[in-house]
Picture (cartoon, rainbow, N blue to C red):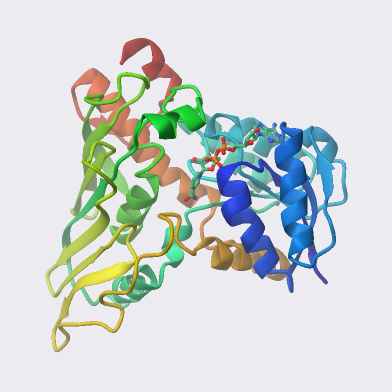
Length: 357
Ligand SMILES: NC(=O)c1ccc[n+]([C@@H]2O[C@H](COP(=O)([O-])OP(=O)(O)OC[C@H]3O[C@@H](n4cnc5c(N)ncnc54)[C@H](O)[C@@H]3O)[C@@H](O)[C@H]2O)c1
């Protein structure tokens, strides 16, 4: 039996990664319907599916009409500011939901999404596809086997370049209502990896954000955070879109009592340092960077989500898991605004930045 799927949002990531992931998992998934407000984009999406040799999906310009179809699940790849409302519409229509990152722009909305899915016994998963990068999976095995001993601290650096033409392509980017800045948009994957590796129980965050080089956007182009975890570990976050003249790196470093790992490259796809007792290298050192910073993780992410529905188990990255990176980011925003550390659970929204930043 194949799961019937609908895609809502056929823009950049929708056409580049979600269609590919559905097509490459066509043993498990049948893409029945696609939807975008823009008729040309939705027809283009249907063309791509047809050109891949699959049945042409039905096209919709109203997601509520798509939700009337007999679908098992939908993927949501619209602007971030719409994720909450469309997720609620889909859950209320009885569909499982795979939602792009960030899952929402307020902790209240994210919690609402998780609770609604739980109450309706439906799956909710978040597109943190970098968790499936082969070097990240290798690191995860070491974390799960406790090979690091006590972990002291971890550091993530997202040092990329986003210029004026990037923001002109899609005016929602960099706005508080629809997106947030370099932490919320570009650094959310790295922040998810950091919290995942450090155990996911945050106590307090201190942050600083600034807009130094992008006068045409509302939100930050530099974000710094220090996160204290309940197990005593500290996470350090640096996100910037100001790197001259192009993307430099997305790097995660973990420092433990009995292990040191650094995974870098353009988007955490290469092992740079791998040191444990009796081990000082790894076969995944110097892997080539993927074509785009999106990587190749949507394909295994879709496979896991489909299998989670079929096997009636939790997906690899649940809504509750996806919420943690959002809480850290909103905690950094709140801390920066109030100029003091913020305790978890964080209750905040990017909309509160609109008036005050
Ligand atoms: N996982 C990743 O690595 C990754 C990478 C890029 C973007 N994203 C996320 O994906 C989302 C989309 O980003 P993008 O760059 O593709 O944006 P985009 O602007 O290219 O595409 C968004 C599309 O959603 C459509 N849309 C809006 N409301 C809709 C509705 N009600 N029904 C149907 N379609 C609707 C828009 O018309 C637009 O075509 C964002 O949340 C972004 O943060 C994730």
